[in-house]
Amino acid sequence: MSSTVPSSTRRTAPAYVTGRDDLARRGVLGWYPSGAPDTLGAVPEVLICSDAEWLHEEVRSVLSAAGANSRSVYQGPAVLPAVQKELPDLVVLDFQVGNMGGMATCLELRLEETAGRLARVPVLMLLDRRADVFLARRADAQGWVVKPLDPLRLRKAVGELLAGRTFHDASFRPVPVLVEGRGGTAESADTN
Image (tube, rainbow, N blue to C red; front, side):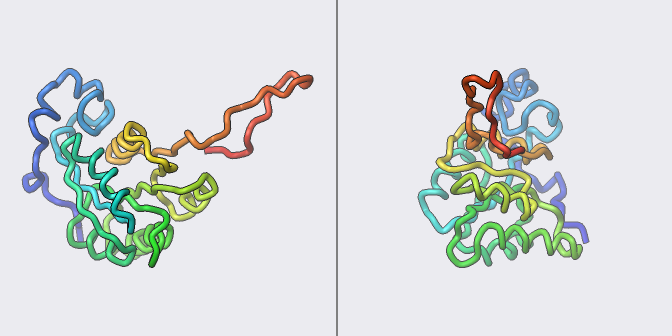
């Protein structure tokens, strides 16, 4: 069973997103970085899951500024039925959702995909702390952004995932520090 939406039923982006062809080709406008010009005219459908209204508003603001459509759910168990019904291009999950966290929700989506009952959908996790990166990786999220949210970083993450790539927020990483007397740098053991 295919769960892709025929391109004839997809909405197209408003003129302000696709009207400046040169900038769009270079990845300056629209969602997709350079490399996906054939999909630039499609309006991404994004499902947002968080139990915090302020987080929905921040993510919606970034998405709507580029002409994307979004739908919100406020509980982890509501994500799977919404994905099955609406077939979004991307799911944005808050890692800390009260009744069923982002990790459990992402794992549920991956289990349904593995069983063949759901087409693969990219997942972007919004993490609270750097230690959550390990769990986001284990849940097979294609990307993550560590809070507080930076609109430009969030937009880049969404664009990368919609273009079929991954996005691993490196802004949380400690800066390499020069250790005096040793002639080298001390770096974090974290690798991305």
